[in-house]
Amino acid sequence: MENRRPGMLGGRPVSASIIRYPGIPALPKDTERYRCKGGGSLVVRVEAGDLVTVTDAEGGQACELSFVDESGRFQAAGLGAAFTNAAEGLKTILSREEAGTLRIRSALRRRGADLATAGALRIFGERSTPGSRVEFTIALKGLLIVAAPAEAMSPEAQDTATPIEVRVRRSRVVRDYSSALPEPLADPIEDIRIKAATASAYFVRAGEFIQIIDVYGRQCTDFQAFAARKVDKGLDLALDSTVTRTLLGRSYPAPGLPSKAFDRDFEPLVEIVQDTVGRHDAFATACNSRYYDDMGYPGHVNCTDNFNAALAPYGIPGRKGWEALNYFYNTDIDHNNQLYLDEPWSRPGDYVLMRALTDLVCVSSSCPDDVDAANGWDPTDIHVRTFSGKEQFSRAVAYRMTPDADPELTRETAFHPRFSALTRDYAEYRGYWLPNRFSSAGPVEEYWACRERAAVIDLSPLRKFEVTGPDAEELLQYCLTRDVRKLSTGQVVYSAMCYEHGGMIDDGTLFRLGDKNFRWIGGDDYSGIWLREQAEKKGFKAWVRSSTDQ
Image (tube, rainbow, N blue to C red):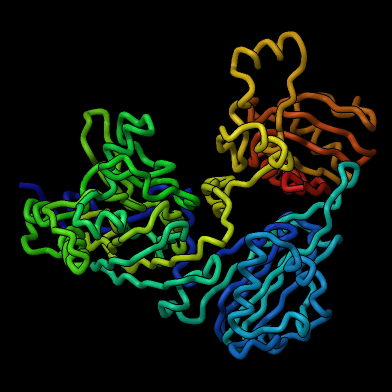
């Protein structure tokens, strides 16, 4: 008979579950992280007592901090410090017609804030070192506004626009729903809160946008839609995953989302515009009573019964199990063709944005599954917002530059206005939209152009880093395989970047712009991280600042 001491399980000490994949950020429960991109801005809802840490991640980047109280007034007292200027950098940023600035302007407008009366506290600047930080405690409830002002950089210059990191340690961990809900992408038509383990039906007109938000993170939701004119005729023709896969050439279910979803009549009902998660499924039906019966939980609330109740007022008959677009579900099919699941990848505020292609009756759920990992064993609320078809939202998916980075939506390169007139065949590549091929020619013609004439390639997604400082040459001499000392000003050389043991990190080109000024252009963001780590490790006085966005 096995001897076991108290507190032992199978001969092992009893312990709590642990995070086995630390690539997903595991910040303390009371801490949130935000990234203000160089030349951009962000707003964060804060309360009295919150501790804010602002960090100049790469050095040399100015930052402006402002604060708006609940009455819409710019108040330096909210920061516990005096404003030092009239927020010129913030005003310049918000004057641009970009998606991020439009969102911040809308947030200020909803609170009645007058930007003309804005003031800001300016910190950091061209002499700040990498990792420079400022901490302060919020004194009032309101909006913290962070801006990283910067001018456009010419190719010959090295005055970069780099990110500012903001961390907020909350004075109270439990926040109300309105505080957890992200700022709207635009002025919403409807705001629908779908409480945990419930479902709601709603009507959307053709051309309008539907945003499905995972408010607290790791919460699944099923989405289903019907053409309203068919519902009026008594037809039950819902979105059909088999038809959708067939028309889009996806013979086998796979994680991700189709560009469009079709009903049984082969009519497209919705198209995907933005997705910040990238991992969903349409493998199986929404959860139903049979599933919980088999799991040993008879009578458990389920999405199918919730759908039936929500759709009944529209005259749509109930089903034993509903097909759906299963948002935020982390399911897959293994090598034995068995369906399995794990905790969702979605984080607080993640969303999917769709556009209605005809008038729709829609239904969304907040999945009640608390018996396995589907919702992280903790079902929470889902939020639905609808927006006017007059709003402009760029097509984008989320891309994480490094495993623990915040997601960034796909961007267009500077060549997009010209390329988009020549083709609609685009693919996402490392955070940018790039053309796969041009409409006037095919791969054979492109091949012969490369052989006999010339090829022009959009290399905007390559990662650029400005390496400057008195020890810039020494840093690059240590990290690259080429003899950097032989490189004259104005010259460029191809090289590999390696670990100490010779393993390759990246390959790229190195430009020498001056005696102590270089530009490294490679394929991966980690090459910049590696250069910064080596500069710190070796004590080199060198700054490594990203310039990809410019």
